[in-house]
Length: 122
Image (tube, rainbow, N blue to C red; front, side, top):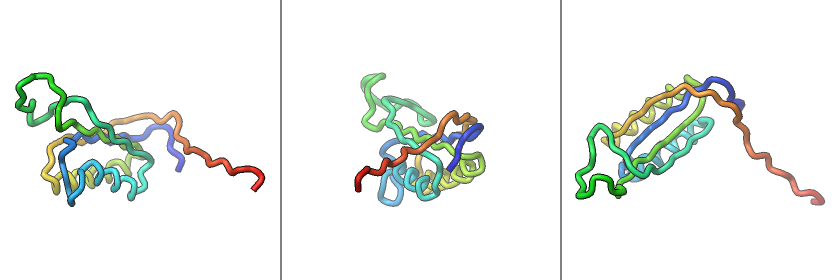
C-alpha cells in the first residue's frame, strides 16, 4: 500500500482495564484494525492521565496509576479512518468504556515496509 501526503490519524485513549468479548478493549481495537487492513496502528501505555471521569481517588495526588491509559494511534486514508472510528465507537459502547476518540490531519513523509533479503547461495 502506498501511503503518503495528507492522511488522517485516529487517536483513541482508553483505560487499560476496559474489556470487551473477554479480551482487553485495546487488543480488540488493534485486531480489528489489522483485520480491516489499516495502514498502521500502535498502542502505547501512558504513565498517568485523567479524563471525563476526573482524577481517580488516591491518597497521593500524583501517583503512578494501577490502571494506566492506553493510547492507540492509527494512520490511513481519510475515508478508511472515518469508517473505522465507528467500529471503535461501537466496541467502546459494547465495553461500556470511558475514553475519547478523535481524528487529526497528518502528513506522511515516509511509509515503507522492511524488504526481506533472500539469502545468497541457496
